Image (tube, rainbow, N blue to C red; front, side, top):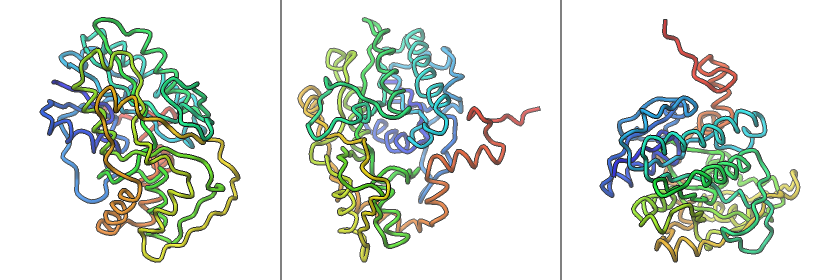
Length: 342
């Protein structure tokens, strides 16, 4: 199958592309390149790609593809709070526009990277795909809007599927340090502390980047009847953990690390446990990685690659990295790349 992956030079895309290629798919990338140089360790082998802002994609660029896997987004709650309109412009409006253009170009399948954070403050009960959506941030709200708007254009010629990923973890050559497990392991390696600013009680569902890639590969190959206009939670009930439990898994892996639950930010309202049975039953998907295994992987890779405090705080954390690109004149205030062409 000929597949276009948006965000192929991001944290998830860099892990996903090789898995799709190993399954026999012909992959092309499309990326604005904001995080192309955010590399820890070996330089990844990217597929052929187009450097295009998601807001500027044309129907011609989408012609000839059997499927679009849409990962590209401004993926960070602090960034969404700082610049909510830009988050909606890129994550919502540009995503829906992409789906419409894909349909016009004759693309049959549209796989959308949504999020379990659409459930928001769901409490301690396991939530299924039919649970009420209670997004608490612009990032999560944008995902809810895209699901609704893209579902509205589904028909016999255009089949979207909404993969609601749990919070990602695990090593990628294009690292993200601002997601919970990756962040806690990094702090433990660099400072010796596993510091939790909340009271540690909120629930979080987690899933390894490789297991997210596996879910997309399975959905890509599934019969249309199994995925047409469906939403699937992506993860494993085994990885529904409290923040304190996630932190303890880091202490267990990083030698000499101390657990500090400060509680200075109080109870985090974002708390939810997720039921992942639908994707198992419909598509035969099983997540392989546990949180302790992911913590061990991250510790090994951070030590091997020589992770530094500066790169951890700046290069691999979305908000300060984008601010640095803007302050250096690479991006304008709307997060568009400033051209230097004459």
